[in-house]
Amino acid sequence: MRNETIDPKIVEEFLSFTRNVAEAPKLVPAPDEISLESTPYDIAYEEDKMRLLHFRPTVQSQTKVPFLISYAIINRYHILDIQQEKSWVRKLLDSGIDVYMIDWGNPSNIDKYLDFDDYVNTYMENCVDFVRKESDVKNVSLQGYCTGGTIATIYAALHPEKVRNLVVTAPVIDGWKDTTVVSNMAKHIDVDKLVESIGNMPPEFMYYCFSILKPFEQGLEKYYKFFKNIHDKNFVDSFLRVEKWLSETPPIPGELFKQWIKDIYQDNLLIQNKMFVGGRQIDLQKITMPIFIQIAVGDHLVSPECSMPLYYAVASQDKTLRIYPTGHVGMIASSYSQKQILPELCQWIKER
Image 1 (cartoon, one colour):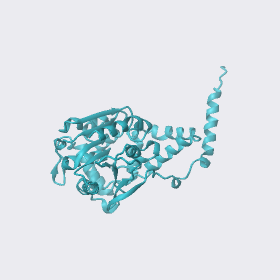
Image 2: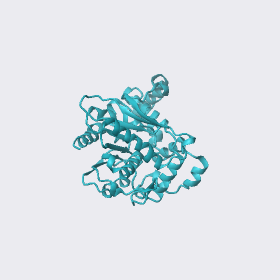
Image 3: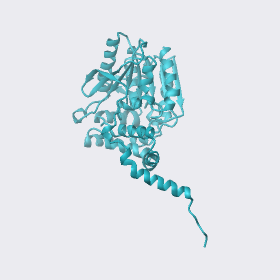
Image 4: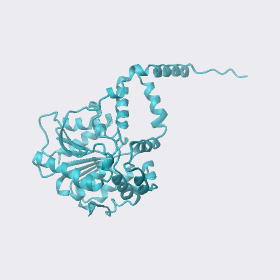
């Protein structure tokens, strides 16, 4: 019979891990003790559940053209300002850019009939007009992130005279070329029955979608890393902020969700210039302003193949496509974002 021994390092690591689990309640703050607010702002405009945030400048010299961010309809805007040292908003402000952001809010049952027309031609249109008037400018620089990038793209196609520059970060554009789990699932949903049965898409549905994207990484591995690093205050703070951000996912208006699944993923109308919003056809050739498209190689929510076709679909002469070795969230809330992605974007904005 062989004399088998257990590696002492394994035993030591196991004991250390179990001690960390036991000590966690003493070291980790409660969710209500965690604040996701980082950079001061004023509520410049409100309409229904939507708010327009105007971030206070951090430097005296600012660009003349204001920069309006359209956040995604999934989760809340906090990920763009989740920590001072990783804040997308703060970096823009420190570069002298006048930053506004649309917070879509938390839709309730009364909002289940809101659709693309409401988001594009009412909420975003009113925000753009407010910023134009307040800043005394003809047009604004517009950025959209993820599904907010799709909304920004549609807006720019319908109202090109009001958009000076367009920045789209991981936009959902060509649904048929999206190879993610979310896309594959969306293509097989009977969305009419789904929305008829439950109305708005609840946060639980979105949690399920996120969990099946990377089941091991989003499950066991994530919490293993957390307990292993329980004494690293910076790691714990970052982890808890992201977890709280994920837990505050709002519902998606039923009608908007229905249009999204049908027009973007199932019928793929946007990239074919066959999509209609508010009775008007979306022609991507109407986008002639300078455009900056940001894509992440490791994006598990919006695959690069889904975003890249926009570069070839628009009529802009001044267009830039950048592909970064990071993921969906890493592109806008990471050290890499601060060192590489944002400096490029800030320089691009200032040159236009």
